[in-house]
Length: 350
Ligand SMILES: Nc1ncnc2c1ncn2[C@@H]1O[C@H](COP(=O)(O)OP(=O)(O)OP(=O)(O)O)[C@@H](O)[C@H]1O
Ligand SMILES: [Mg+2]
Image 1 (cartoon, helix red, strand yellow):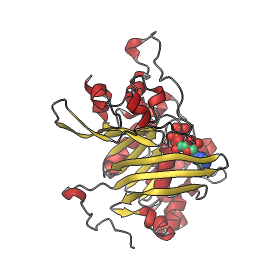
Image 2 (tube, protein in one colour):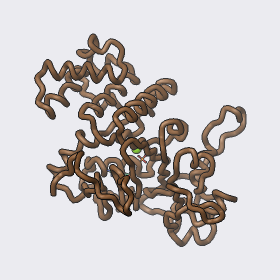
Image 3 (cartoon, helix red, strand yellow):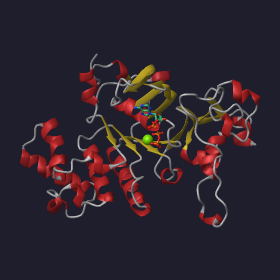
Image 4 (cartoon, protein in one colour):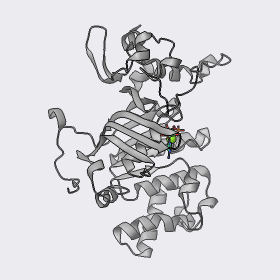
């Protein structure tokens, strides 16, 4: 199997001329541990197109990062196993590629930004050296050329006085600046897709917004696909095009971002929205979804959310809901909207 080059025609499923850059289909990931099999990802379906931002949202432990690690091909196997699913990059299943073919995609076509910049950067090497390494290793540039590229990238991510700071070490930068360096590192080889896993969680709220804006700006400029993983609904409203909500390793709702906020079609999404602090409701007690996320060694039968759901009925305890297509009350389809709730109609229209 060969890797499809950028210029190769992309197969168009369903006759649509606009095939996704990345498509995850029915992905399952489990971890074999001494306590048993941890079912971390249980049938994830999502896609992202060039120039599009998909936000993946969900509480801690819902499988957001494990899905991303499966896409990047950085899961340790074992203990991880992928018993089922496809991860199509430009129409080709990366799970069927050789290690060598995967390596060609990682970093060059798909890059990842992690939450904790300090532990991702090498503390004893200058920032310029680490940025330059991308160009020395992947493009065979000389030391001098690579350093010039590093300064250019630091400029791109708006690090003040980049030329003067290129020889500084990671600890000499603030948290926000370090995260900018991580973004620069991801951008270095001009990938088609960036996966950012909680890129701003470790930062102050004001710095969070700046870093998020920068990421959105660069994504537009380079027409990249962006998968933005977060558990904070507040940070994605302005930058995401669409949202996939995860619960216990499954997608429970998909929707264009503003529609999701206006009319959630899953009680879990509604719960997440109701737990965002709002300025106009100061002093009121904040809503919290009752209970805890399930133990992934023993996921509840039926809908995994049923023990916490205020709307749960008998069927929810026995039947796993499929990802239904969501429509208006008269049956008009709502494009890009799905809900894995037996009672999505009542939830969205009720
Ligand atoms: N190596 C591993 N061995 C066993 N279980 C694991 C391993 N890695 C992840 N898991 C489990 O997989 C589940 C999903 O983890 P994941 O990191 O994807 O959650 P997340 O949605 O990214 O949460 P967070 O918001 O906290 O980052 C968790 O229950 C986690 O404990
Ligand atoms: Mg995570």
